Length: 639
Image (cartoon, rainbow, N blue to C red; front, side, top):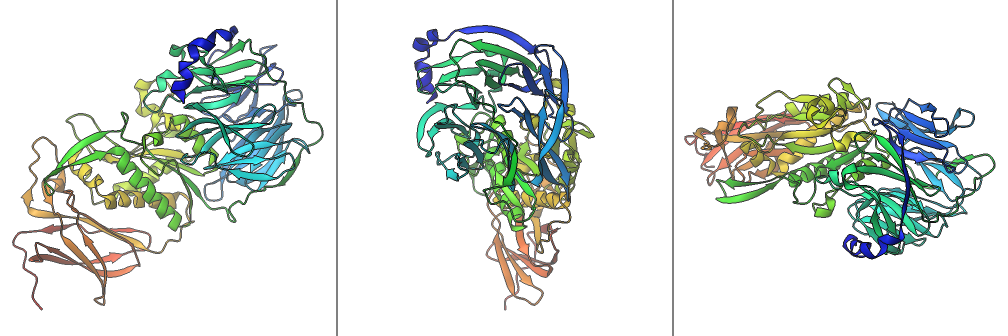
């Protein structure tokens, strides 16, 4: 798709001329929006805490709102009013979102959609604005015409009569974003995460696929403006592009070195942000713009949503398994496995996804609602950071977790859990993020199937990465308004830990511990009744021989491979059997056990050696039982 467009660039670019360029804001302006008449500029601070309005005639600034993280997704209506959404944590850390309307002419701000849980978005319609919630919808006029929106992997089109239809034009997308109708109302444009910008007709039939772009907006019926999909590893290449819907033009309109992001069009003008600095610039192009939609008259209205929302206000968690596909930004480390006498291929994206799928299942079984940014491990699943943040915002979640593992990249191997949240140490940007990070770290450090070299850490990303620049931090947290954290569960270049991460059950245990943190955050929501018994079995008298690797504590001992475990109730009934894998980790995990006392028996080497011990499963807790085997263990008695 993208290659085809680039091939026609040289022959078509001469037909487009750029007009004047000027700077509207010198710094700290993000996600700019122009009013339909071009007289007002709406923009946000980098942390979404302030929504600002600038009169381009007088240069005067007004704070529209500074509560509830109003930035990033506010819009102008055709009536010149500003429509935006705020959020508030309440009811055991659930997020409720409220719709607002601000009139620049009078300075009046009013609530037009009362607080509700779940997704709430301000969206353009053919003749007005809707603030779309899962329970209720506000329309700026009685008749706003057709409009489009996205939720998860479904594209929705509401026609002028109010009938809502579901469409899924792209089969393998990780989610739909930035949907909008063309000015003439005949086509729908959207970005399919992992796929690119697509235009379809009103029945969902794909008309054009325009390449891997982000944040598309209609310039007129024939052209769109969008920004580069730079990917996790290529963010420095961000530019704004002018694209013909028929594929005849694909032209950059900003210089490569500028790092232009957040494009928006209105009245034939293009505004965008220079990344990091927050400078807002305006361009004019000599392409005939489409007529503006007429300002809708009359009073707005609120009605029930046409979509089914959750019957109860259940905590909703967005899970981002980091990376995706075995690409350049993934971290591949081959591992020689003694037991298997072969090389195991470790990729961080694999263990991240295993944890993400496990956490999704665990939380679902505990009664939570969950959303995953990816469910497979293809190159296409390595989403741009803007896509991940937008998918999280689009989900209506209460919490954001990005799952990773870490690496020193040096010979100084360490192993400890680390949680990073947006902001300074002890001062989070989004309220609740620091608390969440601390809670997750508390339960992570309790994991006794690993060996920690240092104490767990919970840090603000601005403090942790000062060399990246002032308030730069992690991209996946940069424009994220959800309470959240990036979890570096352990260090995968510490060899014993990498061998543990090759175990799906060990990754499941990591996810289980994260779920305990989520339970604590939303306390007292979860009433999960069962528990987990886990541990590691090692040789007491056989040392590891890894001369090139630093080892800590019991990791100096060689783990067992291939041993058979049997778990019995206190009445002697066998309830589970488990065989240790051959990845040199010795990890076992018995999940979903009813609380009670159990007997654990371990057999090794044709059952010539064995261990027997008692364990106890506790409600919604982990019981650890690490064991040692010796060559002189007594043989199992014959019956």
